[in-house]
Image 1: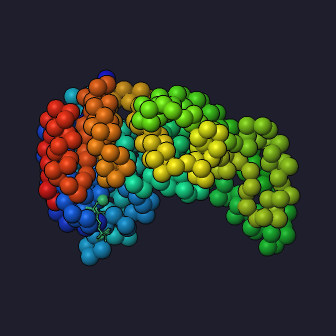
Image 2: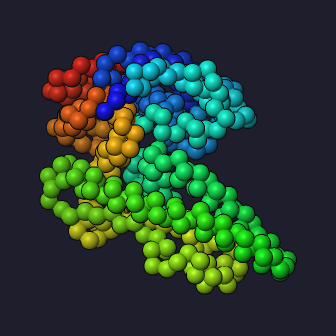
Length: 362
Ligand SMILES: Nc1ncnc2c1ncn2[C@@H]1O[C@H](COP(=O)(O)OP(=O)(O)O)[C@@H](O)[C@H]1O
Ligand SMILES: [Mg+2]
């Protein structure tokens, strides 16, 4: 397993972090300070540089400090013994610029998979509570880090879907023909959609045992949990689904069948966790999902991902946090970034693990 480290980080105008510089020479770094000081935003700055976007928002402008007209991030990573200098520049109203070793990327997707990073955050409850879009995006990130073809197919599928929906709208308003064009879009949806379905099925089958194993460790192995990949394509060919839905789609003026309807159903003892899971079970479930994501990224990239633990004490008791720190370190040379409001608590827990660490007060 190769090393991945973040050595230095410079932040300018990233949300409420106006200016900060760090050098990280330990395996564990903790950002401590009161609420609202920018701990989460600092972790997000790391995530943004490594993964090409904020963990929390897909809207670029949200990353720029309200009172500034640009933000800038710079990080020096070490990956397989090579230094990677990554810069991200964003001016208000312009598109984001990503630079690797002084060379500008043509497309942001070129950066994906280079610096695998996993964030565990209180916002992860969205995975349980929100709609299927959140879970599809989780799956897509999981696969996209390992598989560039998948990313491109997703982009092409999404584009075709938008065009098809626009056409359905037109057909609805003008009652025009354009059936031939619809048929062309159907063909394209099938061309991109089937490999997306196959990839999701394949990667989720690999993901499930990793998840099971993490859940067992975290929860003490009492309950049976499951992840079920649900897709309309599982029971019927995509072509036939589209044909049957044609009438419906025209009435609804959007595309009602396809992999954009896929979902990942979380259950515990056979019941949906959203309705029947206890608070503790949900927390364990979410952490297991994220640690399994960590495991899978590690397998697929042969790099130990950076792990960002935001407000982890919020989710778990001190014993569990210490276990997680140990678990992550046992397998590999990972690097861990943690935030907490209580410096003493953090220090106490990490001291138990006997790993070198540094506290950064915000
Ligand atoms: N674009 C922005 N510009 C300025 N401040 C922002 C921006 N986005 C978020 N904030 C502020 O950042 C603060 C939260 O920072 P955060 O990193 O979550 O704090 P912590 O994790 O230390 O509690 C909030 O006060 C919020 O208003
Ligand atoms: Mg926070």
